[in-house]
Length: 129
Image: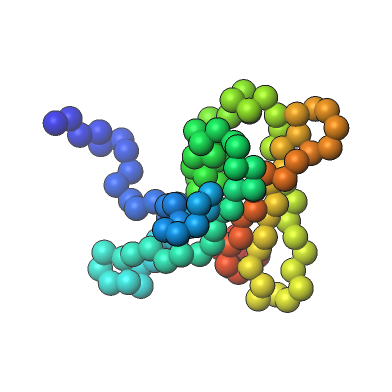
């Protein structure tokens, strides 16, 4: 077995997993060190796919990119060529400072009006606001 010493052994700060009972929903987890010597993950948000006809490969690439961005890293690749559309987003204005951050993702294929694609909701503090 070859070991790559250039790869980081540090835990990823953010990961995602499919929701146990809701289809087309993934839970976003953040690594917390207060959970003992090995740490652990706490749920800090979710990603709800609205465009349920989206290619699952594209959805997974978006989730990977979101987790990398939350980790402060650049996404590994540009997946616009898989969708032939642009991914747009807007952040919903908060009613209260303690409200979670809600981001709506939309796709636009260059014609007509953009279509809702997904909604990302994360707890206050995850985005360092």
